Length: 77
Image 1 (tube, one colour):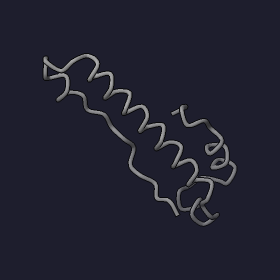
Image 2 (cartoon, helix red, strand yellow):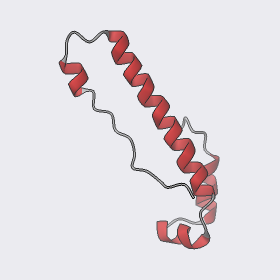
Image 3 (cartoon, rainbow, N blue to C red):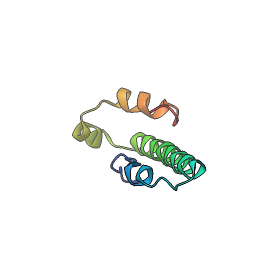
Image 4 (spheres, rainbow, N blue to C red):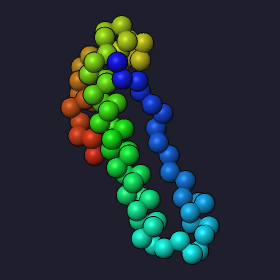
């Protein structure tokens, strides 16, 4: 059973504080963050599909809500 993780957060303040960091490096970090966010959405939505009725009740959502969320594309946050 896959485990759900905490949402990712991106703190670019340390990266932005360094004036010598190339714009392409900043863009690469942002792209990496987007790809990690998409991967997390994909994995958690797949895990949601596999939850039992009792687990869904613990989370506080219905089977219909879980299925609707699982059908959403990974790129839609």
